[in-house]
Image (cartoon, rainbow, N blue to C red):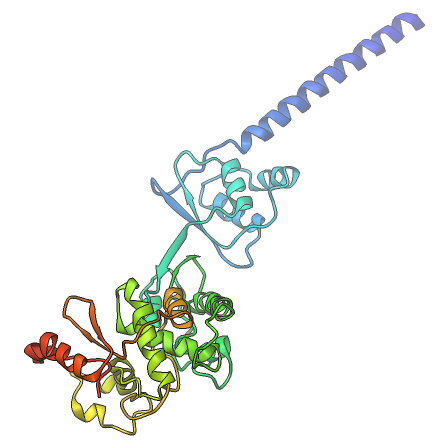
Length: 349
């Protein structure tokens, strides 16, 4: 009897063990299948936005309330077991009809958010850069204008922020602000300027890298032809070395600000109150006049050698260079005086 009873007990235990194993296996399979369920987006292609401070649990609960997933707590436990419950990045996540819960969790873990981009072109002013940022709907606006204390804090107190942001294409995610872009642009400009200044020519009439930034902004505004930047930089460097005034129209125009109506007149060139009037002041203007690119900075710290002291626009985007005032005036008559409506001669005496 004892033997038979023991066999029965052993058999029952074996059956229970098998049933338990099968149950656990089926439970695990069901649990694993749970995260293979496809999310039911409200549209063919939806966007899930994760806000700052949201936990995985709150995100899954919100999806369950919307009817997009089932059993959010079990999904959360699976994510914890699979080590996919940490490092959720703020931003927007694309959800296709075929996206599974497991894929979404992996997207959270990898930070595969939708990325946008905004381009700040070379030669624009800080005010124009802010207009571009404020016209980008995915960027949050926290800066009012170029005089906002937030901008000053990014650069340095009591220092003009003009020119201190590298023109470049910047990628960002939903939730980033205009200040975030400017911080990155300033860091890149600061590093690029310092690196380039260390590689400067030995005989430059520039005291520090900030003066190089100022002159680079002028070069950037004077030409849109990359090959001409070293040539124009060379003209300005030689004028500074000889004690000649720069006499550059873009600097005068910058100083006029909103008063500039598109026509630069002789009275503007005679205006001594304009601190950026390089027809009246000696040396460099007090601040940059635009956002220069790296190539303009490189052109200033390593200008092309030569004897040209003057240049004038030919009307096709290029310039004609001259070593003497007489040759320059000849170029002016050839290229500019016949088009008085858009007369522009830089530099000129």
